[in-house]
Length: 363
Length: 251
Image (cartoon, rainbow over all chains, first blue to last red; front, side):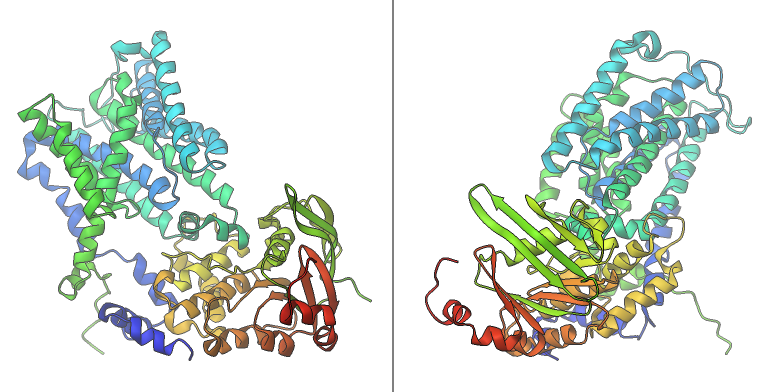
């Protein structure tokens, strides 16, 4: 075959192994190969077990832990559009804030049931995202960044001026949540808040994981990789972009709703530009397009903020800035991208490789 | 005579004062193997861009079978069976070859907006994608990301993506571009083996292949069709000989 010379010349050890697997040693055919992509890996299970650790190890930090879970959900929503569809947004807080105010207003005006409130927050933000998506799906690059940024500022000022509804700069007061399932009150220690946020994060993570491994997720990666080719294979790129933007907005709205419900207040900060920028920083730190990147980024960012602001409340962004510059310079695919490279070494393969169901010892 | 699979009528396009297509009238009968040749800058790729809707013509009409498609967008034309490949690799670098072709199959089947089931649940689509890769001898490498494939394999994947859309009319823009001459046999074999149901128009600079494979040859110069004929007529045409062998003159 004509590429044979090239093939062996350019080959590295790692690729040979991948190719061997591809020819049917571990992986039988295209179906097995694709199924293997979807299987849960050991390291993923370890990660989710570790999220339970704060209950035992750091019970005094459950409030922080629930904030991290909420922020991680927000970062996950951004990953869907940025990491998978290539939509850069500097105004994603618009949906977070819209969800936060929706949940807050519903609770303030008499309906404090958390789950339905959260659903409403997601639906409201999703609807807003759907309307925005008509513009978003049609622009790219700098225009995209500016439009998302402008839209975020617009919503912030709208909330600021509508103080009769939102409480303006004083924040929305009088949000009272009913106990979860009528049983679990939102306590001061954050126990209910953390497991509530964690469960919502985990459920929406599973949804996201399913989404990216579906035909739709494949199309999104196609759009990110090469939108010109997508046109040439007859793909409905516009519809895909609108769909993922709507889903992402709804998820951001749920995250905002969680923040409202667990803190029982809403401040203008939920719509702040800073929040949009922070979540972008977290995602880039952790690694975009990896699902876990936003989660890891949120943990690092929030813990760093907690620790550094304890040391010096004024200049805590300084170390974050150093971290960001270092990561972008040396680990262009984020911390997870860097780890993935290290993990590609054989030694770590058994953790990284998809779990293969254990065969019965009996024939 | 039956309706041509693809025809253009008075197709024209200019960028400012630069005329890149001037009054182009072509007819591709069903199952045709037509070659489009001409010097660099003759407007061959522009013509493909016009036909596939990547460029809008200033004047003229394009018909796919009996249907006018002049105002349709590129995606809609692909869905009707008018598909192209690219001279410069236009692929999905981070997708494996299998994923890329499965993506094209899923888009054609209209399941690309669904996300409740994982891709592995669409067994038919995966089998179909794999069959396309097998037919182009890419099956061995289909679990590798596109960017890691050898250049020649990427050229084959260009064709694989187009085939996954089940084209009626296939426009191949220099399928062997950049592949060393002694290694281009695989690509030409792939083009030769295309189903007779597919109408093919291809741009190619390898004259051996053009004269061996094409039933008709269209020669473009300066945005115009200079001459169209069967290989013998083209080989004997003094104007064509002048362009390819002698000094170039204004078209």
